[in-house]
Image (cartoon, rainbow, N blue to C red; front, top):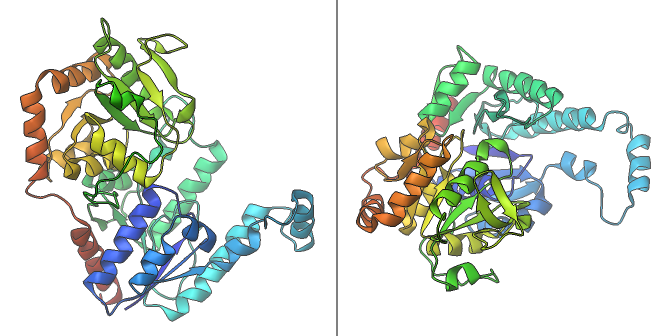
Length: 405
């Protein structure tokens, strides 16, 4: 089977690790599959996946449209704007980009048995000469959590684009909850396939050093909860800060370490109304965006990881932590509960909209070491734990059913 894989975004972090794990396992399951990834080759090299894919016989190539619309470092902004205007792409660059990308993908598809799109958001559905399969990760753009995630124009464009994709491709999601969400917003789109994914950690159980991380929050012996998050409303960081202030009311019993783009500016004392800047004692530390190696180290040494999200496709940090023997705290929401009921993992759960409930889960995790240890051990031996081999087998079955209906 000749498989065309198109990733026009190549999202850093989880998106890239999802792609890498899936493609490597698809190749190992069936060496007869010829897989070619078309993407931003420069970004793929930056993320370090080109060599890893090449080791398994997977070729990575430029999407030429991306290369032609990307400003070279050697050209100034004004000169590049002039080039764009002279080539007819200056009036509506985004529309011209999408049109060129659709045309290129359509032409590429002629030499393949199927086209797989691991992240089709922000990509208009192209006409291909082979069946299309897309993974739809979540639908948070359909909700208003308190602040807009996208503009009205972006939301309308996403809604129209995804509707077109679902009419002309096979949809895959990673949880039964997300299948229900897809069918709620886009009725009559069945069948929607569910393939649970595994940990995105690419280092398994390797022992990795601190990798230039500030480790003062480790050396003082105070346990820390690790919270990786983007700074958006539905990630719900505020309620965790408020919960920590309840936990640390009389003394610093635990710290909160936050990672993610922009979080390096976060440092201070937790307060019920929010982070108290400049106040002491500091019990909240933001590290900014960290590398995969640093994340592995932080999870391994955390007292527990915590995911307080209001809405997700699944608990990614939990999936990383459970196989590493790290305790997990998580919101009591349907996508997260699938990890417990279907896969056998254990977690301290809480109502994400209630700071007192979050604090109670933290208190239980700290105050009941025997229960925390039971959670860790039972999660390590979870009877139906996901793996990338299982996920790849699920995708391969879908690929075969689409090419040989």
